[in-house]
Length: 268
Image (cartoon, rainbow, N blue to C red; front, side, top):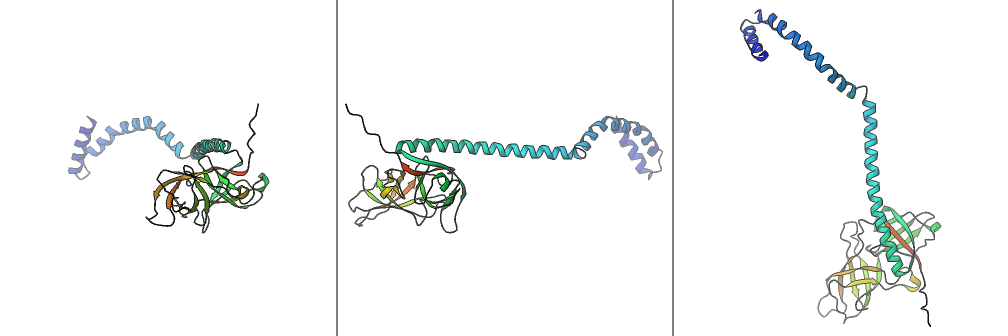
């Protein structure tokens, strides 16, 4: 009804160029309605003014608290992932009878090499040329140490060469990195020393080991063959190996500081 009256008054006032009594009549009719609407809406408008004005500091504090809770949630998720990696690391260390010092990666990448920095060093008994692994297998080798940190060269670095043994056949060879770890592929090149050896996709590869266990301990899982690249009649067999370790997602590693001797079996 008010809408119909308003349209009629506006029409009369427009036709009379604003000199019509409808202009005054409209003010008398809609003035009280406007006051009533203002009284009803004033508590709500006051609330929104307070929220955007006087309470802006409180809202800012709540926003900061919300951001902090989100950060803590993300940290808890990362911690759970690290705990899973640590559990796998301890299981692998126990299987291989490795004495390990657990550490977390705190920095990654080098100018011309694939390296990471861990938060443990000589104060924890870590020294250069020690094997680094995680719960999936070989990560790399320690190249430099400070009191509280150590630099690890990843096994996939282009200058890395690892002596390996085929877990199924016992054939030995060398595994070299391609320097593509940070790009996500991380495949390695395998070359066997025997010209008569036969390579097949899916074969597992482990470390052959170094004299005194430095820089590589024996029997550490490395990866598996994904494709054979050697040509018929070639003097050596070659293939591409996919590492067991996901180098783009490692968080917790273990530095092998020694190997526990096996206990002698009891004889009757």
